[in-house]
Image: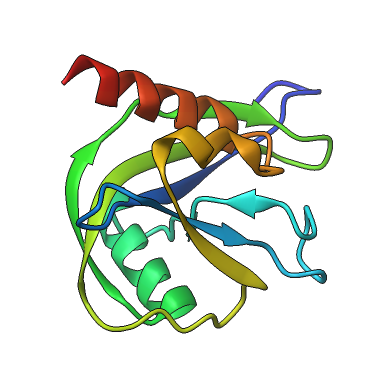
Length: 138
């Protein structure tokens, strides 16, 4: 890596869709970075796992549910002032369990016309726009 370059952290996120085509949004807690921003749940990829394995693990740890990955979407590289992340999104569905917040302050199920109304973490906004474009194309 050249001087002045930042390491990019690979992070997964889940667009968890229910039977009504609503999408799950989670709100970061007050003590997390980007406090109280809304996000797509997920987390950092460990060195020994694939993005898919990471996402399944993170969702189980954070929300106590099991997911099935349906489709991958285009990743987004975003520079925050404190970190650069490559956000790797997957459309998923819940296959087992009830949501139990372990780290987040709140969650909501949103219709597609409500998606962009929340105060989202900046890296998630292009992912949401790609998701909406994907839905319009199918």
